[in-house]
Length: 299
Image 1: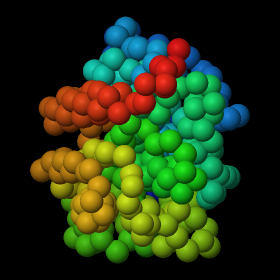
Image 2 (image 1 turned 45 degrees about the horizontal axis):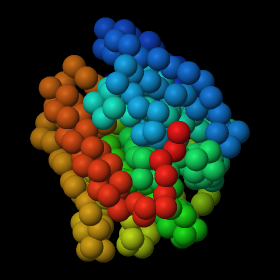
Image 3 (image 1 turned 60 degrees about the horizontal axis):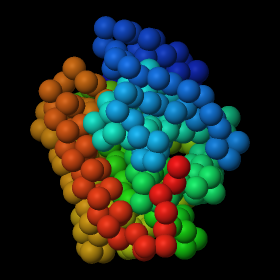
């Protein structure tokens, strides 16, 4: 996969390659009972992802990965459905605008707007989990930072899978793992980054949340594999959140690649979903217990 992506010179070539992987049914299979229903929030296209055990009040708002440049709906919908089923939640896949046609700040603006629209529709923050992988992990954290700075209600918790947190690429793993990562080499990462940020400062905290002040954020579950360029993006972020007295759970798994929980054929992926589900259920309960008596549940 790394060699095939490295051979792509344009975004369109990368999109064609990812589309072929997304369509390969032998690797990607939807869980039985998954229902996908198109919708919109804040004029941003989304998909409700429902399973037989989904609850109408609990929502996992998911920002998919893809280097800010492409999407793989079969892979991401299947993962979100499994996590939603394990937590008795509904999934909401946010299909934000992609670069280079829609560079920064289009994606974070839309993700922030979707969350605000959910609040306006009556969903309570204690019933919402934000989650995302890779580029979507970046959007998860930037959304949290924007919510904090706007003094808006935070979700109950957040999950980030192999997030991109440092667009300046200063982590050692980006170089030490360049021959181990089965997906990306450094040139591929830089191509996607440049599509997204153009001439913007890669150390801008709204682009690289590693450089933000990371205080007063909700509980977070963070996971990555040892065989990925972006491993240090997770480890260094977790350390910085801990220094800010944040509630952070870091789960680094040996021998697995970038966004490993998405690949259900891996036993480590199935284990990760169980850990995430336990985390989500615990934070739902904690957030509900903290709600003031005058607050009512959304319908």
